[in-house]
Image 1 (tube, rainbow, N blue to C red):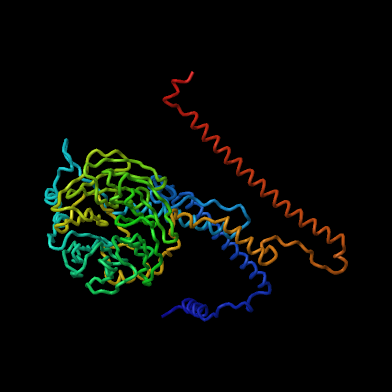
Image 2 (cartoon, rainbow, N blue to C red; image 1 turned 60 degrees about the vertical axis):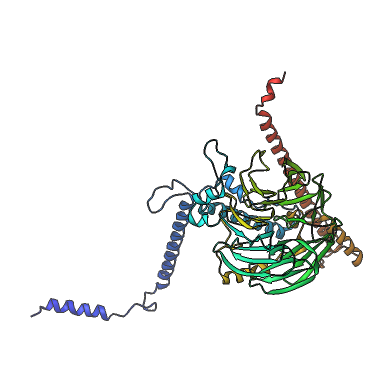
Length: 589
């Protein structure tokens, strides 16, 4: 039986449970003061929390670890080596204009920040690239050019060994060869009309036709779905199944072709001396230029700026753009006719061979000879790989050279003899393979260190599917560069042509009768209650004039400070250079 005290406890407990929550109108008379105190307390707590968060963020910025309480031994982002940053450097920093164009300055600053961020990201991700380029190295006192292709194929793995093969096609030769941009497909064109498309890695034949006409050259277009064939009379376009899509009769007697992938332009050189450009995206002729140089059978392109290089029988090499009817540059390279021309992928070096049996290396930036080599039989065909290897064909012998523009070359890196005279050569992109077309068919050679080991999956992906190829084609068409932008120096596109701007401005002033860019004269606004008297108006005008004058003086002072700073930097640099010791100091008295 429960005691009375237990009953009282239970009753009070029930009463506490039944007690309703407190309301603001049930509080004491000074409830407003309590509410205000509560609000102040909440505000103080919020401020304390903000201060704590701010302190935590500052500690993290200083490199302190909040969880363990120990400082970070490696604060900040990981440093990037300077040489790797220089490898991915895009452009020099743009000099900001001194005018008061804040919008332009902001745009330049944001563009530089984006470019710098992309440069740093590319330099950091360079560590993740899976492949490295290698070269063939012999034993002591062993010459690498004496190593045969059979020995290399036997020494490498099975998949790499299958890349060395010979196609015996003596009936329709000699052959010209061309690889697609991804390096997967091979296009062969025989002199006597035989045209074939091959997936050369899987050895699968895509199509094979005979055009029953002389074939001068073959070239893949923007993708492996279409290719162009320069036949005896006209230029023909075929698809990858061998079906003829177009016959372009404006392009007659074509001897050589080059395709500009980022402009969708097919450049052709004809026996009549005409250089013609065809826009394959719309099927229209962009330009037709009479070079006045006779038969054009030597042609190559500069991958850096899309300039076409033509070799002539008088020993000159000319540089052409579809925007001008005259040659941009004329260079006298050889005493005899030019036999072949090749330009590296950076657009810095050009290699030429001529009838005078000389092989010359030029710096395209200065148009000067860097190296000159004498070949006993001369070079009829030249080709440069992505890694800078040079292949030269003399008769039926193919020789490959390394570092022809940096160091004097005394012997070839590799050599190979084919069955008959070489008619065309081409390095395969992203593979250590050189394709040689000759009178007895086609030979695929293994050249270690020739191809770029890492590819850009958004530009040329060798493993892309049909759907990816279609999407890439749509994006490439949207990003197509117009032929008007082709010039010797691509960096000129980012500069302002002040002379043309001034001429246009003068024409506009003459047409309008006034200068729209001139600063408007300050006219004080009319005020009431006697505040627009002559004295007040004159005082306001003088005040505005003083403000303009102050801005001009401030701008002039800033310019002087910048000039003085540059002068001091030059003097410091000069002092550092003069303080360095030289080997010639011992001759000083």
